[in-house]
Amino acid sequence: MTVFNRRQALATLGAATAVGLAAPAIAQGKKITLGALRFTSHSGTFVAVQREYFKQAGLDVELKFFQAAQPMAVAIASGDVDYAVTAISGGLVSLADKGAIKVIGGALSEEPGIDGQKFLASDAAFQAGVTAPGMLDGKSFGMTTAGSSFHYMGSKMAQAEGISMSFKPLQKVGAIIGALKTGQIDAWSIVPHIAKPLAGSGAVHIIGNVSDYLPDYQVTTVFTSTKNATEEKQQTQDYLAAYSKGVADYNAAMIAKSGSDDGMAEMVKLIHNYVYTDKSLEDATPGIVNGTMRLNEGAAMNVGSVRDQLEWFQSEGLVDSDIALDALIDTSFVETIGA
Image 1 (tube, rainbow, N blue to C red):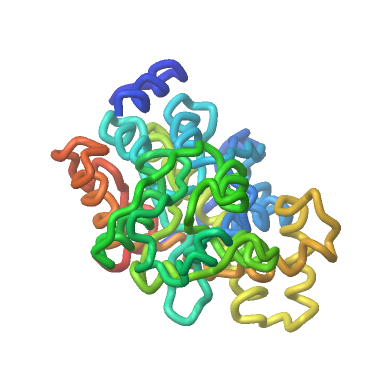
Image 2 (image 1 turned 45 degrees about the vertical axis):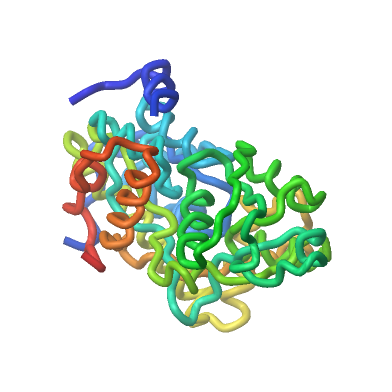
């Protein structure tokens, strides 16, 4: 197995059983670092921290926040982060091929009947007649980096519609938002807690749903270093069990609404500790509620969707064509679906 330091991981990117209530980790209070984005889709992690599920599993958790998927892959490979939740990127796949990373679970999926990710158009494009994804022929589409989830979603939509778009790498979500609002790019796709407030501003318009093109898309996954997956199995099981309890609480409050309005309000308040922290709770609440998507119970992984993503990366020449699916995923920790 290859062990990566930060410099080696960066160089690589540049070149490129359901979860149960496992017994607590042997070393109580074992320190681990979790990577996250300030998105509602990371609420399983936030709930598990706030309700001390990680602590109960014998894990002393530190959160480290990122602004894009690929830097998280680097951090996992270099050992700066132990576990993370984010979309599969070309960089992550390349690092998995080098033996540094394993996807061990699913986090967020597109699901029929649950409002999901949206395709957006700038006001300038919308006023010029771009009112549906199929009208984006010849237009520009924002992404963080080549091989990002944004690149994948836009490309799969374009293939389905038989159109061609130019993809613009802007590195960070904030930069994409700024470019879309000012008309520097024509379109983008993003989770609803960001899409709906942007559309409400009038500078951006919702023109379609990602689920129309990718109905069972495994949007984000749980991943770790190959070392943790193979040599720290108990710790990994403890992490996944605690994370899954956070997911179950989130789904119960926000999807099933088993706690009625009070339960939802309590969950929104908890999430606000991490999402829209620059806003008051009152102002942040609509965005958090709008971002409600079901998280994968028990961190179940849609293997069929992960396979499709890998095959797309390969077809685009973003990763080596001979990378096998089992180099990317370890299915020993969670239930798998769509295989």
